[in-house]
Image (cartoon, rainbow, N blue to C red):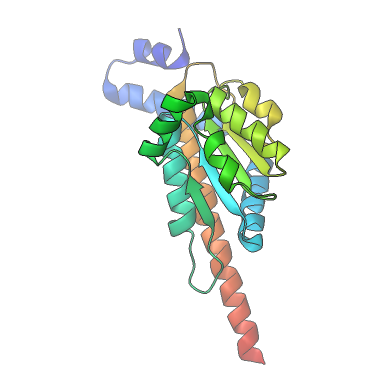
Length: 214
C-alpha cells in the first residue's frame, strides 16, 4: 500500500483526504535540494544569455509538463527589451511523433527530433516520474554525446536519468506516486520561470537606471 492509498483508507471524507494529500506533498517538498533548483535556474539563464536552445521532453503527464514548461519559459518569462528564452517542447508535434514511432520505434521519438536540431551548448531537459523512460534516457545520452547540457527532473528513486544527466532536480518518493511527483514538476516550472522573469525585469531596471545616470 502506497502513501496515497493509506491516506485514503484513513480519511473519512474528501476534505480529510485533501488535507492529508497536501500535508504529504508539503513534507516531500521540504526535502527538496534547493541548491539543485538554483543551479537549474542558473543553467537556464546561461542558455538565455548565450542564445542556446532549450528542449523539453517527456511522456504522458510529463509530456504535458514539457509543453507547459516550454510555454512558461518562452512566453511567461519573456521581458520586453531582454533576450527571450528559446524554449521548445518535443512532445508537441503529434504528427511527427506518430510518424517516428511508426517508422523508427517509440524509443526514438525524441532523439530523432534532436538529431537535426541539437547544437553544442544547448540544453535538453528530460521530465519523468520514474526516470526510466527509454526514449527520454536515449535522448539525454545522445545530448551528452553532442556536447549539450542535460537536466533530469524526476521522482521515485530517479532511475537511469538521474545518473546520466549533468544536473538532477529530484524529489524522492515511493515508486508509483505519480500525482505528488507531477505536482512537484509543475511547482518547479512555476517557481523557476517566475524567478527568471523577475530576474530579467530587475536586470532591465538596473540597466535603464544606469543609462539614465549617464
